[in-house]
Image (tube, rainbow, N blue to C red):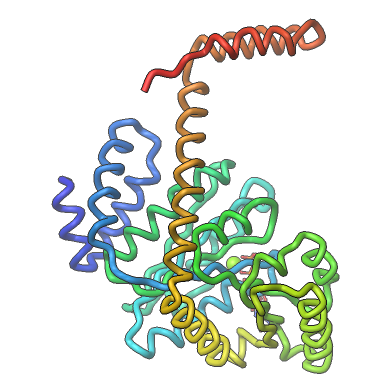
Length: 318
Ligand SMILES: Nc1nc2c(ncn2[C@@H]2O[C@H](COP(=O)(O)OP(=O)(O)OP(=O)(O)O)[C@@H](O)[C@H]2O)c(=O)[nH]1
Ligand SMILES: [Mg+2]
């Protein structure tokens, strides 16, 4: 397929070409990488406006169910919804998100929606780097709302927050998650907190809402996040959450905040991309690999000095 085939197909909202284009940018083959880079450069100038939303939370909190409910609601108003799922925990959980295409059955059959799970190759940075390009491809294909699901472990929340306009954190009343995410600073990262499965115990959900709202007030957060109770399974409060997101997005779009934040995100991304490419060069360099092998065989002896000596001799030619 030529570059032109890809761009025309994408602009015609051809899903099969969109899938192929994503596979192309996820490829680690050098010849694919060159083509992918050209494709993304072209796409960056023709993409359309979209709202990018990150959805995170511990395993089983109801992220997929929430996205299914929100996505289905959104398609009722002529929106085109793309769902991207990043699974950084696949090494441990054997890829829980990958089952999501079947879990989001309704949305999966919806002609206005596109679902793409991304298996982690055990390399969070790699997957997330291609996710930003996947967003661009989806925007060219006319998807005006991009929902990104990620399990709330490790770095993934920060990375997803770095490529979205709006970050939703899902939590529950009963699993002690509350202390965990207050400790981890997730409250500060998120733009909106959703207490899911409120159908199981509405009183408890409301009590948690009160505690979290008080905590946010005390933390004097600049973001002024809202806390919602919700039942993704029974569609409770989904519409209200969407109205909140939409109003906040429009407000921030008009004030120029979205553009500013996206520019900052692009810079972070560029730095990460350069770092990753440099690492890839070093990983594929036989001299470097030989040095590592030698050092591993003799860890106890002067390793630091030797590393410093060797590293300062490495030169990268651009
Ligand atoms: N009672 C109730 N159950 C829910 C609700 N939302 C999700 N569930 C159930 O919780 C389970 C997990 O839901 P998922 O949507 O797969 O959760 P997830 O966060 O995407 O899970 P992972 O992708 O594995 O991290 C499923 O059995 C859902 O039916 C809800 O609002 N109420
Ligand atoms: Mg899921």
